[in-house]
Each structure stands twice: as structure tokens, then as C-alpha cells.
Image (tube, rainbow, N blue to C red; front, top):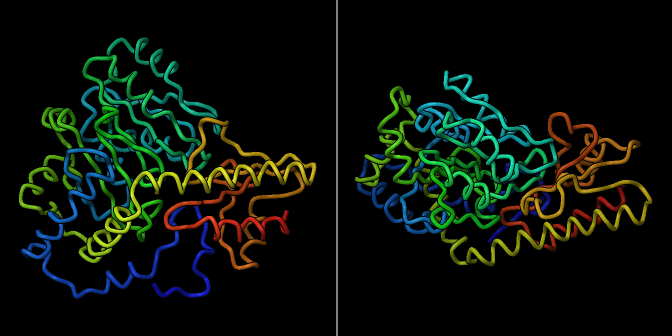
Length: 366
């Protein structure tokens, strides 16, 4: 594969760096989106896409950001009231969408940097007395670097009749284990631009049979993100609206790459990069005597993105700017964490060698 000198230096927590061969795939000639070629393309990539989600269900393809499929979760699956688990900026977005679309919802909030825990969820659902029929959660909260205990949260949801769970896996899909069927996840969505390592602009989702049954009971599901339309069109290997065909060409190419690597190996590679980042933070704190630390607690850390808290004489924008001067792109903290932290996105096709090059530069900066 041909690369340029800048490849391997783009460590944002999304969008991630995109291998140039995917852009080559996107340069294939445009074809009619209702053509037999596109139907064959969509049908052909379904087995690998379903395997990525670890589900027997088909995968919906949406020309939108993942936020569109977050909206689909709210508008299709909220019949009574949603309980939105929040532990950072992006998980709170489910509640914001509910408010914007006129759906009843409450927030169950953990402090930024802390996970949403099963015990708190069980208590909220119990005290709700049957008021809730949807729980939303972000698996990997990229504003804080927290990885929520998804399997345990889903198990709690299944203790309550008629409650569904919808999951944002935007920065964890292809980076961490997500066993959609085994864990009983009703609606799982992701975006193209993080650990899947495509350009931004494509969303993917899987809906359980329970989700489809719920959607049939919900009026005013919306037009563009009506899950029943996605399901109906997949019967003919099509999408309900005009898809970004060039993105589908790239997705086909990238799913083949992911399949060749193997999900277990891909998950292990991401975890190894995350572990190396945590070790570097500890080494830096020891070497400098300054309070550098990983924000997320041990046991609840995302393998895709790490948020590193800084001593008072450093700022996130400063560290990111100095890394940029050295040719590496990282991100300052997000939202309320902007000044006091920076973020490394170790996801997608990045390698340990590339990460070590970044950490060497950060050694000089801090």
C-alpha cells in the first residue's frame, strides 16, 4: 500500500486516519444506486458487517453521521419514556435528541470520568415503576475515555419486562468486543470514522426483532430514519434513501481488511495500544513528579481513546498545538475537560510503532 510521509501521525479520537487504499476504492465509477450492482454490493458485504456486530441480524446502512442512528433509536423505540445513561458529552446527546423530537426522557448521570454502573441502572428502573421502556447508553464515551460495562448493563435491562437497550458504539465498534446477540442488545449503532477507519459520513446499525416489534407500535417514527423502512428495503438488498455508493465501495474494502486481521486480533491490538498509553502516563508522572493521570478508572477504560489529565502548568490546547508543530495531530480535552486534559485516539489501523513515535514526541512536550 502506498502511503505519504504524514501517515501514522493523525491520532484524533475520531475521525481517525484513513488508509489511502480506501480512497482508491472510493474512486470507482459511480453506478446507479438502485442497480443490480449496488444490490449485489450490499448483499455481499452483509455477512462481514453482521460478523463485525456479532449478530445474526442484517446491518442497516445510512448515509449520515452516527447521530442519525441515535435519533432513530429515540424516535423508533420510545413508546413511553427513555432513560438516557450519561457519563460525558456524547452519551448526553441521546437525551438532547429526545428533547428535540418531543420524546419523554430522563437522564441517569455519572460524573465525567466515571462509568454508568449496573447498580444505579437497576435502582432507577425499579424506582421508575415501569415508566421506562428504553435505556440508551454509549459504550465508549470519547469525551472521557470511559468504557461502560455494556454486558452488565444489558443484563440489568433484561430484568425488566418491555424495556429495550440502545447502544452507541461509535468509538468502540471494531476496537472492543461487542457481542450484540449474546449480550441481548436491541439496537446497536456505529459510525464509519473511528475504529472502523473509514472517512466520516456512513452510519451502520443492527436492530433486534424486539426493536422491530417496538417500532411497529410507535407512531411518527420520522421519515429518513424509519427502521421499518430500513428493514423492508434490505429484503431487496437496498437502502430506503439514496446511499453514498462510494462509501459502500470503501466499506466493502475495509470489512475485508478487518476480516483478514480477525476480530480477536483487532481487539487485542487496540487493547495493547491502550495499555501502552496508560503505562506511558504512569511513566511520565513518575519521571516528572507531576500529576499526569488517565481520567477513566482502571477496569472502565476505552481501548480506542485515552483522556490524560494534566498538571496545572499545562493545558490541553497547548499540548495539542505543540504536537501539531512536530507533525502529530492529537486533541485537547472535550467540553468542560478542554483546558485540563488532552486525548489520544489509538484506533483504526494505527500500529504500536506509530503510537511509540507519538509518545516519544509527547515525552519532549511534557
